[in-house]
Image (tube, rainbow, N blue to C red; front, side):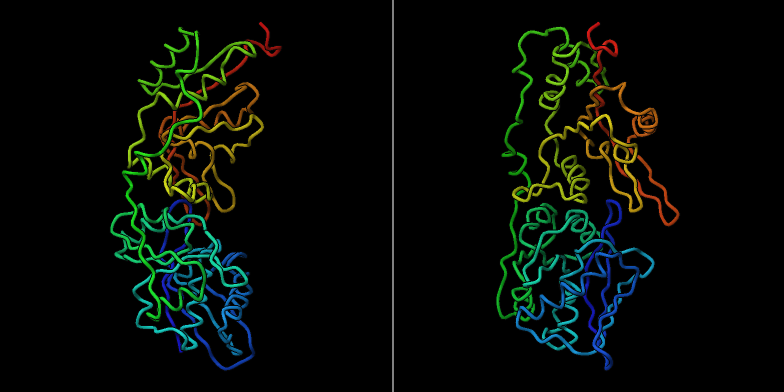
Length: 357
């Protein structure tokens, strides 16, 4: 008997639908996961086995084959745990299969069956709407993040048993209702404010002009002159972030797990200040499994580079194209990913290496 469940996986900052097929046949008790899974997905079988048993379900003592389609896209992360567990229970007859096609399942399982939050929920939710999928079951801490997407029914759950009872219509889960405009209206203030700066009229006027025209700027002065203090307050005089900008920014933060669970949306312009020892990959993005770097995390905000001459030359050279194009393209043998990077660059340095002249 083959059970089919829908889920999604994130590649870069985009999500792709994954059809999970579970087949249980006679044979030695084991579970095989195929379809280009990474190590995290391969390890999920141990979490799933314990979660099913601790939720008082009988784990099948037969051969279980789990296929993650399409097979040519690498599946990363722990977000497929819940969907695979639901597929196994459906193949065993514990779940009404007629209701499975109505939902998408996302979540990491703990050993006792509880649901843990996962990364990349916002791009997953936005891609669901594009694909015509309208209902998602996911961990409660991720509910606000998915709730900012229109035309999507979000069902937050706490554990595997609650999800099974919900699918079998034995219990009900109230869909989340979230107002995105209220999130932006009641986003709270910044920790710092430009109005707190006393004196420094000339540099304050210069920064106001730079912000008004979205110009990059360089602050030069001896230690203690207030370069970092002024830079940290620049986002407070930038225009309020719009809803579209907030969604763009939140997608990038979501794939790295940096979205506040109580809000689900980045409601303030980001301020990123990487250390001068940062590598070019940390700043621009990349890696074997490409991830956004600091310049993408600063999208729609400020990238502050303190002690500019101390950054490696290859790091500074890597900033040329993103500053000009507003995005960075990371190419690998298997695919090519594009990360947005429209930011205001603010750099600071001492007049000379001694810092005093």
